[in-house]
Image 1: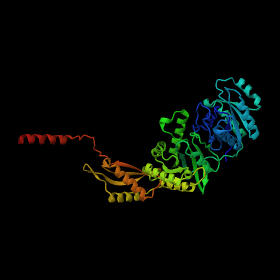
Image 2: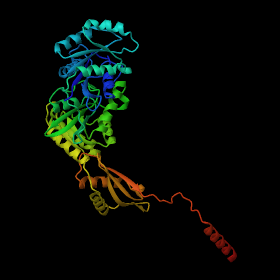
Image 3: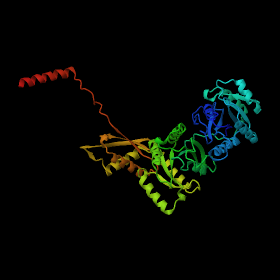
Image 4: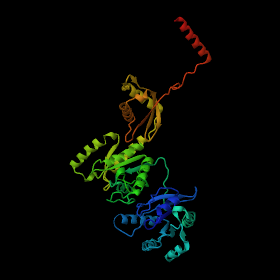
Length: 466
């Protein structure tokens, strides 16, 4: 268990910038706009193999208790309550404010060890600024500039002196057996609600307001003896509708989460059916080649007639990913979650399955004999052999001749044949076709002197005959 340090303060004082500086990463979204961070975001400040501590970035406390601002404040308070040390971040350029006073009063009630950190001190008169914050009564105050990494080393040293050897945070491990699951979808389909339901706590802020989640948040979970890493992501929208810079950064983080996961769970709102935005999100998953499970959320709110209509719509609009399982769930009430995990297990097992060269060659032989490639303008492709090319997604490399004229329909036939033969569900299957190259292609035949002399004699002989 690592010691845990919480970054707490009002909006836009530089908490996320400091988080990135201390963890030497760009995991937290940073923008010159209040309210970018909303959920708790965890990371590790690692100095060496033996010295490290956990860091949690929190949303700015705006002094409101309702709506998103209130939910953000509750997340920040939860982080402070579990921390071994709280870094109270204030803005040195703006000076002490009434909101800073209010946050400090609350922090003192928590009785957590607190260190005052004055940020944005680049170009400022340190003596004047420290005098302004002296009324807070801290024996030690640290002046830093997170954006310019000024004072970060001194801050880390001070933090280490105040932390216990063991703390409250569990480090996100790199266990290769841990199933990495990304929950993706358009805004407001219930991703955060589903993750909270699986965790059994309000770990993510869930709201009816679209775009509530702005960053990708990873949380480890153990369920039924298996280890998972759940990643809640920001909602993806079509590019034409993305205007704010913060939302663009959020989309980048979501696409990175899709690339790094093993199974992507696409959430669809059953009350709205499959929309163009859903298709856009699905395209991002297919481009990444990730295993896929479709979770149709809010199923419990439909009538029998509406369910029949939605089933028909799903069958028609998702026909091109018929290999992916669709599970009907209710994130709010928890129904269908057992079936969801079963589908995730099947998709993960298929995506990470390992194949032997002999078994895939046997499969290719049977597929070839059952349905040989068609003749295209007098040319017939020949499939000589195949070998495995990787996993997630399962990849097969086929070698042969005239593969450039192999029709797309035959490639789909091979994909479906391998999928059925090896019982692959919930994962795309990728084929790479390689032709043997002609070593003499493009080369000019250079004659030896003896061949040239023979050619001349032959030409003379032909001329004499005429």
